[in-house]
Amino acid sequence: MQTAKDRLIVALDVDSREEALAIVQAVGKNCGTFKIGMQLHNSVGFAITEEIIALGYPVFLDLKFHDIPNTVAKASAVVTGKSVSMFTLHASGGKSMMARAAEEAKQKASTMNKDIPLVLAVTILTSMNQKTLNEEVGMDGSVEHNVLRLAKVAEEAGVGGVVASPQEISLIRQACSENFKIVTPGVRPLWADANDQARTMTPEEAMTAGADYLVVGRPITASANPAESAQKIIEEMEKGLQQRQLR
Ligand SMILES: O=c1ccn([C@@H]2O[C@H](COP(=O)(O)O)[C@@H](O)[C@H]2O)c(=O)[nH]1
Image 1 (cartoon, helix red, strand yellow):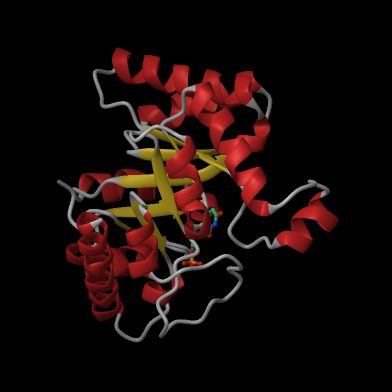
Image 2 (cartoon, helix red, strand yellow; image 1 turned 45 degrees about the vertical axis):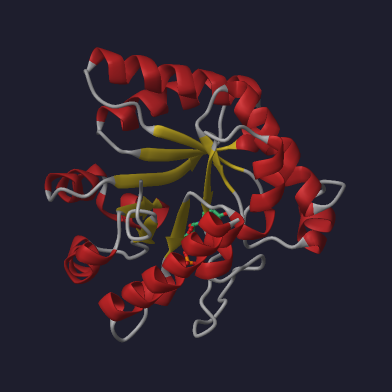
């Protein structure tokens, strides 16, 4: 059974190896996984992923692939070869793109005798609201409708789960299988700023709703005491897990 700490993913959205390692050092005991996104990866390359894995932490490589199926499939093999535990692609890249990525990750892991990474499809970014989705992106229908539609396509394509906001967790849980993972950024304790996140919930609410993993960046990494902030979030998550078990 995974604890609240195991389910907390800390986003290392910084520019340098030194800044990233300082956060790892500060909060390594207070989280389960570190997430490396396009900011850090594009600054320092795969070296930081390799270094953090070598320190003994699982890495979620969040590069959000979105390209033709062949290109995404080959990129998926590359990141699988780096032993990441999770990686992302955009569900809006389509079923064939997601299916090829999942298959390629499986094959590469089997060739290298490694664990298969959790392939996650990003549904609708948590920074988007109804207006931006409809008027700027040009997708009709509600955010919830589109998240659910993309989550179903992702599951059919054979990826392991989705990235969605906590506000859509219960809808996805009703429509997808129990094993389909839900990873939620857009998590904000009441004491933290929302920043550019539009569809948020607190750590307790997100865990109560049924999230598998929470992704938290700035409320921890930009706080005066990252370890203390991570610990406070874990305590809120524990309350949510307890509520969930009581249901
Ligand atoms: O829909 C999405 C997909 C990915 N993210 C990533 O999660 C973290 C959130 O960081 P905060 O500082 O807690 O806002 C960040 O790395 C995003 O790239 C997301 O927020 N929403």
